[in-house]
Image (cartoon, rainbow over all chains, first blue to last red; front, top):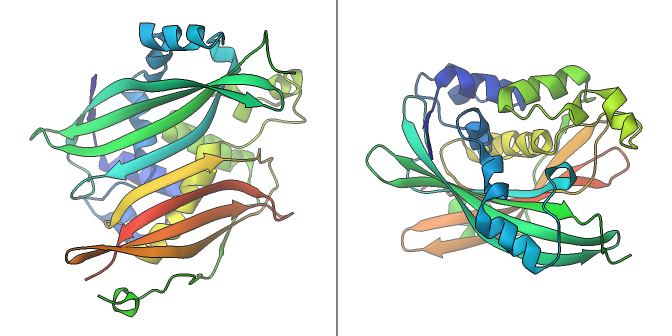
Amino acid sequence: MAVMPIERGKIREYAAATGASRAEYLDDPSAPIPPTFLATVVFWDNLSRVFDLPETRAGCAAIGVVPDVRRLLSLEQEYVFHGDILHAGETVTTQLGLDSVELKEGRSGSMALVHFTVSFTDTDGRLRAECYYTSAFLNPIGGGE
Amino acid sequence: MTASSVGVQPGQTFPPRKFGPISMTDVVRYQGASGDLNPMHHDDEMARAAGYPASFSVGMLGAGYLAAYCTELFGVRTVRRFRTRFRKVVYRGEVLTARAVVRGIRRSGDTACVELGLELVDSTGAVVVDGSAEFLAES
């Protein structure tokens, strides 16, 4: 859990870095966040701790995949927004949790797909956004080759 | 509510937008902005040691380009869902093209949601990031 301020300068920086030229992002003191802006949560919360959770380790062990962060790939991210889009000046609290671990057989061996969620709640206690992540641990041993 | 009352039709496409050629500056600017400082995206020596010809762009930079493209089309405050999958590694010098298609229009009560399919393709036409998004239609 972490407290994350939504900052105007960070929105302007992120918009410029992604080629987003809408004036609302660049010039509005209450700028709305770009759709993938909540990726910047990593400045406030260490998401990699999801891979150290006992349930993540147990889930990987159950399907015989070693959770080695050197063999970790990010496959997918999905953002869902509830109500008004978050904007500069707001503050949110994050919550990180594991959803599931599943085995996937690929061309280069087996991998563990780790599905986890970060939720963002505002100071009124309303859920405003969720980010669903899918990452994969590639299996160095006992793979399907 | 009809499809035309939300201003778009299923199957409709939009003018594409080009991004790049992707430079090291583009990559490090995104890494600084996002906080993802994985050296595989800016350290050529490390990337070569891992078997890549050079360091490569960040998947989320491509996702950010798709996000910029569709907020230009549909507005910045109406996004309700944005999903991306990383399909192919992108090296510096590549020019990427963003395109979108209306997959459907979902209605509930007085609101309508435009469902978009999104693709970012490289100069060979290969999809490097794909995804989908939903925007509330302007009422």
